[in-house]
Length: 401
Ligand code: NI
Image (tube, rainbow, N blue to C red):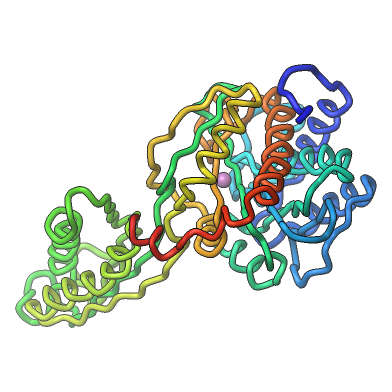
C-alpha cells in the first residue's frame, strides 16, 4: 500500500478543513440533516463518486470500486446537538442553539476524505467500499433507518469512528469486545390518592413511595446482577406536586440503565417492574413502567478489532487499548449483524464531547482520512485472500460477551 501518515498533501488538507468548517458553520439536528446531505451529494458528485439510490430522507451511502463483493463499509455520523456554541472560533455555528459539539463534522470530513483517496485508487480496489454518512446518531434512530433502507445488503465488514478528545493527535484507540454500553431509558409513574399534608392517612403517599422505589432500584446493580457485570441505573428526573401542603396523587420519574451483557439487559425491565409493583403494593399505590430500549452495547469483533489496530500501527499511529465506556453509540446495531469494529481517533480537545467549547484539532483530519481509506482497502484485500475470514460463528461470539 502506498498510503502513509507521513508526507503532506496540502490540497487534501485544505479541502478537508474547508469541508469540516462548512459543516461546522451549519449544524443540523438528528433527522434534519437536509443541507448537510445536499452538501455531501455535491462534494461526492464533483468527485465522480456514485451515490446509491436509497429511501433515506437524510444521510446517504456512496460507493467506490468494482460494484461487486466483497463489500466493506466505512461509516460516519452527520448530525449535531441542541447546544449553543461558545468556542469563539471564526467558523463557529451560525445556527443559534445548534452545534457540532460531538465532532460529527470531523467524522464526516474524515470519511469524505477517505472516499476521495479511495476514488483515486478505484481501479486497484479488489471489491467495493461503501461510504456511509449516517443521520440521527444522537437520537439513536439513524442506524435503524440505514439498515431498513437496504443499503447494507451483502456487506462483509463495517468500520466506524469517533473522535476522542482525550487522546493526542496521531493516537488511535479501540478494544476487543464491548466498547460502549447498551443504553435504555425508563419512565415510572406512581399514582395514589392525594391528601392534605397534615392528614396523610386519608390518601396514599406517592412521594414516600417514590423515595423507597428509588432506593430499591439501586439494589439491582448491587444485589441482583453479578459484581463483574457492569450495570449503571440512574434516576435523572423526578416530578411531583406543586405546593408545600398537599401530597400529590402522581409522581413521575425517568432515568437510564447502562449495561454490556445482553442477557442482563433483557432481564432488567422485569426486575424494575417487580420492585415498583412490590413497593407500590405495600403502599397501596399503582406504579407503572414505560421501557424504551436504545442501542445495544457496541461489541467489536475480535479479529476485525485486531485488524484495525495492526492497520493503524502500520500507518504510523500510536495504538492504545481503550477502557470500556458507559456511554452509547448506535453503531452497535450494525455490529449485531455485520462483523466489524468501532475505533477512536485522537483529536486532543481541552473540552469534553457535548461541551459548548468543544472543538477538534484539525491536524487529525488527513491522517484519519488516510487511515480509513487504507483500512477499507486492506479489509477488501484480506477478504479476497481469505474469504472465510468473516464467517465465524456469531452465536458463539455472542455467548462470550
Ligand atoms: Ni458523537
